View (cartoon, one colour):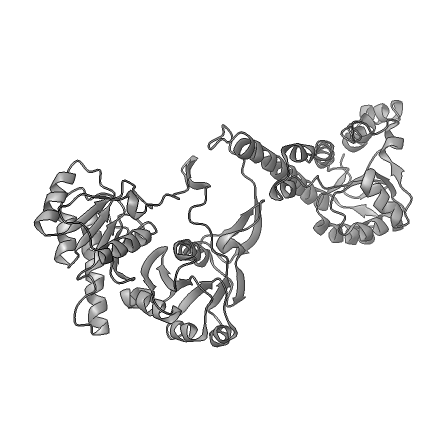
Length: 529
């Protein structure tokens, strides 16, 4: 029968992370707990002034094979696994000179850190812990009688429990620690399996996909208030939006993080270029602009769709300055994300206490990786859409070749279109989007919606003509019929960039030639769902 309170008499300590060890060891000794340890941990404990029994003395066997074999012994695992209320187990302990171990403090060789610093293969292999996970699992399995600690962050709670319970821990605490221990070893094994699959064996889709994430924070709610949500990070560390530093503003929501991720991924396409700005709403760009200054770029992006920009997410590719912050602060904005911000910009936003300002490094748009999406009963996994095309990759398919300005506008529109939900149509002119049509079931509808948004923007701004006149149009996938291209021409577009590949390409090319359009095929599609 399980006893709720178990008094600690013997502790086994083997840690690579010595953080918090001094306070924990002092608490254990204060409650009369005998310390058993190995190698560097034993040396550290002795340096603190504590008496320590070496594991070799406990087992009667020396450490061997450069420390590879030291704790894999019945006197260790018997002491951890024995059921104290089972007469046969107790008799086996007595017959084999096995003493019970009530508390184990184990953290593992720093495998992930070794990989992260670019260590050689042999060094990585040596940092695969064997004895540590075995002791953790033995202790966690027998949590009715054994307390297992795997993280220095747990030490304070255990010290408090020992002080409260006169050197004992309660079952509820041991169960929580056991759950954390199994998660710890699962994550460790996932890191090892991931390295073998992806780095060592260069597999893209291994037979078993190891995935272990650490919860960074619980969010207020999910996509909707009735949903719950949390942010998880990979063991290799956070990058992108997940690694952003929040300078001010309310706690980030699920939707804020999702939209900010889309904004940062898009603006990263312009890293190292002149000032650029992207405005995102519901994971879709509603305006992207460039300019001589960041304020000019913001205005160019905002003017594309000033209605949708309200309550949007804004990303810029250069450190945010005061004038740009003043322009942004003129309307309600949820999140602003930038590589940095000067004192003037921070002072402007300080008056907008709910506006979230994030500072983040630009991710590499061409980086490799996997994209995962859950479906009912399974998970879809694909390589990231890191494809890109240059002017040299494009094929002119019309009688008229694009002008230099049309080439510039086409490639700009194409860059934006890859970040727009399909069916995606982007009109661009003079370094800014003129109209964006996103997420429609018909490519023709996306073409018309983008043109209508451009007309609405021109009317709001009082421009003499809409910015789609003389623009270039990008389509994320081929035009299945000529109607979408014709609608773009009617809106004033003079150049088209699209993947090509339709069985009706000839009809679409003929329609372009009939209207004097220039059109190029990229040979690469960018569906985004």
